[in-house]
Image 1 (cartoon, rainbow, N blue to C red):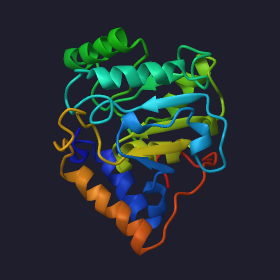
Image 2 (image 1 turned 45 degrees about the vertical axis):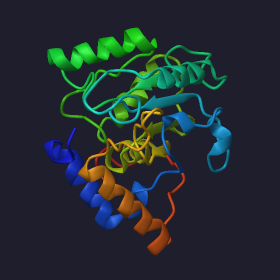
Image 3 (image 1 turned 180 degrees about the horizontal axis):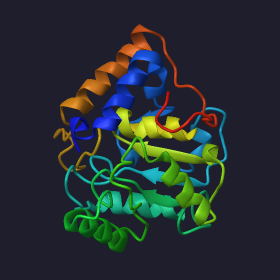
Length: 229
């Protein structure tokens, strides 16, 4: 989903970019989901206990704007599900997308059902006014209601966007892992599926880290109202 079509998210991202740009930095960067280390916790700063993982769909699990799965990604998701961190509860792995499950439209609901059937993991049904990065409270409620965890610091969010995936993790007080290259086909890895904003985010991330020496803040429970940096 283009960022400009999600105006509340754009406003929130700009607020952070101006006042707290370090919140847009991930705790770990990997090329694609296929490089996700398992278990996840030991690969993060302070080696936290991790009990739940949120996966983005577009350009992370699947190519953008499709629900078509490549076998390499199916295999990776099976390994994630079987990892000791997530195998104790069938709801520990959750897809949160700004397309699949993000509205009641037939297209978005069909995508969500297709992913649930093929992957055997749930897709969050979002409120249409609380898409990433505003849906943190809904993610936390899902994991709490399904007995996964009540501690946001036991959750990691994995996705290709700083302005949605990394920022929702920060808003929740959780960990973030950024897939810098988005989704890549292992057979044709040179094809870049990232859009304009994703490519700009890579430049911003390099500037914040290399030019300004910024680092991602460690997760902490956010006591302010959602949507306020």
